[in-house]
Length: 264
Length: 302
Image (cartoon, rainbow over all chains, first blue to last red; front, top):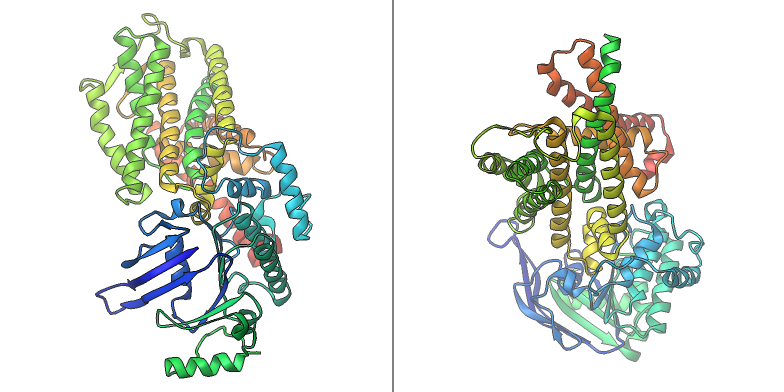
């Protein structure tokens, strides 16, 4: 479904702030893979997702989604293949627009937008059903401005918008990091549900090692812009946080450092 | 003094409505796209110049007005390209287009800074010779323009424009070409601004190279006065556009009032700038005060 081949990316090349963010990164995702990504500060986790989404161009290498080489496509054209949820709950929705308007925008991801009416009544009913499934009481607030919702509600809505038009690949970039533990658990459970029901291929960056172990069928660990550990199947199920920490120091030669890593 | 104010009130209302049309154009860039577009100082005069030149050369008045609109669209296209393809910040892109339009407008008017357009000689749509009629006709323009914009911003494309202004990252993540949408916004906005320039040149009976000087300030004044006074009342999009027109009318009534009170006409621009600065500051001060006294509502918004 996704193929990254020898991706290199250096930020601020030629300056004192030069930072090699991705260093010969390669990975292949199979259909239906749900991969969790962990790694220390500056390991390149978010950069990897941003490269796939086309937020910045790569220095070299190629990105292939479902057989299509998207390496040269601008961000808005790649959106056709991707559902995205960001760390910042403010980032995935348009605050000044209504819930139904946001959903209608997402429903047309990857389609040409013309002079047809932006929302049909049929869609409105469908949106209501979808919102009811979130169980956040949003189904009767279609014409509420998204800016008035809580961070958790916005993140759940963003998630719904990311999957309502089935994406080839779902990118979750620490999407529960800014939420309180209870809300985070709920959004995470919703992510699991959508991914399973729709049989999505997904990449989830997380700073929580327990979450990384508990979710998905495959786990990768990144360090200095490279994948240093890639476990899946039965082997992944048996992992513990201690395993991951010792694997990290063995493979990278340093201690695991992440400002937000929760080891509990 | 009061009598002269009352006498000039209808004229103020008519001018306010015509400038209100211009403010609708400003609303599109300033409020919907969240960009300050200074092109309008130039494109307003372009609209006036094109209309007078076309009409005096014998063209049908409606066709002339259409050409004014198209000329404004072209100006908007230039700013849009400078902003999105040259990577120039929107304010600077607008200033560049505005500056170049000064020369272009002089070219359109064959080098003269002022071109008369007599209502006696040409079949104009409106004129200050008949102010009540001018008010009525310009109000009809307002209604038609708001109706068309209401429809446009209710379409898929219109929604994608709103998303572009509100959250460009989200827009791109949902497959929206934000650069193209910004260009469309600049085009529509400046088209409407030039149209109102074309209407004003008929109303006042001439086009002048300086008629658009400070137009952005008047447009912003109208938008902001409308919002500050009617923002709580008007939630519907069409009504919010109409609030800008009302803002324009109020602005011109106040202007006429201070002129009748003896304000030197030379000080008018200074006065306009002060009015806009105060109205721009009001929402900010309000927020500061409520934050200082712990009003949770405004904190949540921030």
